[in-house]
Length: 378
Image (cartoon, rainbow, N blue to C red; front, side, top):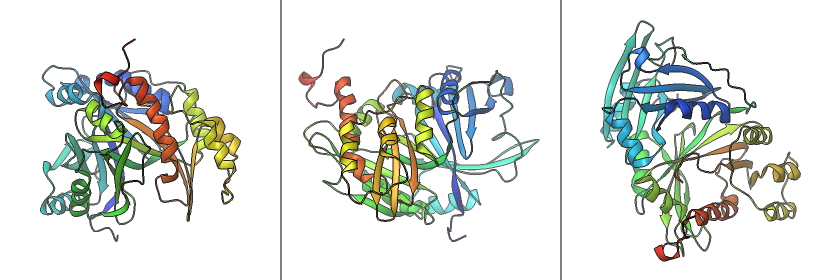
């Protein structure tokens, strides 16, 4: 394997939330995931509940506290709201990956540990990422049960009826950081993970007259892991990145992009399951019809019906759409993406995307910088 750290790809993402049982139901009902495992007081885990949800290569863990002494979960949710606590990369050798990272400047969170029960063992280690986020190295090669020690079969009725969504796995994970932190974290990834900077969006590349951002995309040598990093950039109003940092009370994971092989069917199913998406104006599709070089397999009418964005590149094109924030705070959301030869992240769609986000920001009273300009409460 050319990747010197033995990176195999994304493994799981763990969310800390206020109520894992209710959140797990939403993930199962809205995204069409299967509740595949459970850990909690009934399995010997006294202070928290965790639900393990899967679909194809996608693995999510939803965790909440059940005891007041569960300070890591309660403290996280109290400050940030529901959000991503950690995301994991599967590696050949946890100790080797962790050793390389720490020797090259990674901040240690958890040394390599062997989590063991009668079904075998899982190796894990973790380093710091952003403020309260962790990046985990994991290997399951010697474990033949559900997820990791401490998890068992779900205890509740899991026959949740929903539309088949056809989602496959993680395409990329995006972090939002403070002004002047983007280069720091890009360098952190590149040094500790042997990544390289793939794309660098500079001033003027992404934004409207009201809000803007800077972004760098880092990736593993084989592109199995891709991580865009955004920071706010000066504009007339408050950017979506500033709003995130204010509402999240720190830097962290902004969204997860989930891949699909048929985004038209996926978005149609997700909408039927109750997922809310950003609104894309019809003028976007009028302009699409005027593009001479646009050759795509899909009908523009279908894209317009489901409000799916399309971006053409020299190597192909991609189709994408973003949900509205899925929690109470305007922070974390999902992206759904289908790549047809394209390796980018939809730069040509940023104008329409930003304008759509700004509409929601204005409704929340978070677009303007001046407090006296905020919308009055209902």
